[in-house]
Length: 239
Length: 365
Image 1 (cartoon, rainbow over the protein chains, first blue to last red):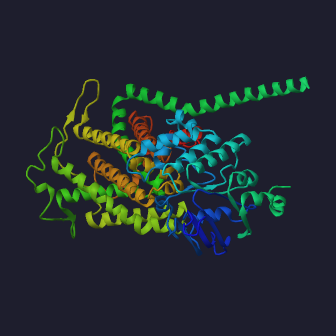
Image 2: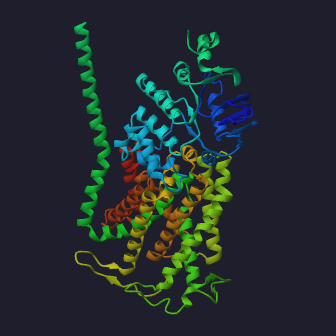
Image 3: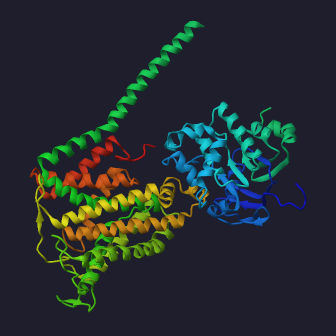
């Protein structure tokens, strides 16, 4: 990242939680343009809280969030998507009662026109969805749902994609395919910030990584270096 | 090794066998209410045609209101116990703009010097209806006026409660409070005695193969049908409608897709309120205006929405028709006294819910 170019996403000194007691304290992460960044950490480290705070579902007690150098602290999700942020929750990440096509249309809700070309473009990335456009999304298999969830989030061509444990509860084959998708999305120029339990796989496709523990920044560095780090290997990779 | 593999194979086949049987049983259970309701419907249409037709008329009123109720429940997350009283209030608003009448001191009415009735030919009867264009206009105005009233109630009562994390039960009880308040206003402004939109003669019409029905009832059915189709098209063919369904399905994901859910909520109250208000005016046309009538309708309307699968608009519509027909045919055929109409309706509701816990059109999850 050059000094003059603002990062695609910057969260600085975030303190946040659901109640009086903060779950994360003074946490900072940044994602440069075109970068894949993974946050790993044990259960309860506050990874999801951080993502939800960045995306405006939770209000930060302290700290600031910037997208492409513009401050967006406290902005609600429905406005953040217009600033180029997109979010795929870990669960309930599709509209189960809507058709696959309607899911994509809703992903492009803020587009006034050009919805159809965008659908075609997204289907180009995920051709498996094409024959299922008229199907109810709730009837899709686990892997297909995850694919649709990614496709919905990509409808607005976001500059930064936030992923909450994209590989959770998927079969090993589907895990491979989801991370391949993430890499492919990134190839198109979208920066990715994801949190993952599956640290080895996630770091393997990432440029950089953060380790969060007890709601605080513990480690940060290039993904390859984290994979080699003794602490990470012992604590998160089970070696 | 081979034997182990064989045994696995056999066991798996057994699993598949019992799985298929269970799946078949489940599907039969799912289909049973449809089959039974279908047979009863066709039978009553043939054997008790007169009661069936009345049931459809009354049912179409329930249906409209139940669609409003189910939209408000599904999207605004309010179990709206004031639904019946909002219907009646709208009916009175229509009465007021039509006649300009308010209850005065004592037994006499106060009549304002301006009212729709005073427009030229406003009460000139259209076709065989008992009313003229004045009432049609009055219903439209009442339905439009009901919208800001409901939006204000949502803004002042339900939304602040939900924003503070109030439970479904608390919001429901608060809506009961709104219901009682609305009834108080109706009693105060229009008095306790029943009123009618017009005192004119009610002509009947006879169509080949059908019993004689009051001409006004054609207006009721036609209006309900047009509004039901319009609501369907809105929900399934427009961007707003899809956003409404998306918000009902998954509000957080709707926000993450850039949908302004607060605005979707306002639209829901507007559309749901409009349907409810028209249903109330049509109900008053079918029977009469009375401050208590709305509350009496609350149970059948909830029954209709739950029977259809709460949150499902087409379910609520079908549910309304079923509730209407079941009530009218069992009572009309003389099998039971009129006092048990609601009891029979609820027996049907309970049986359907036992087989399909989420209603006829409810999602299975």
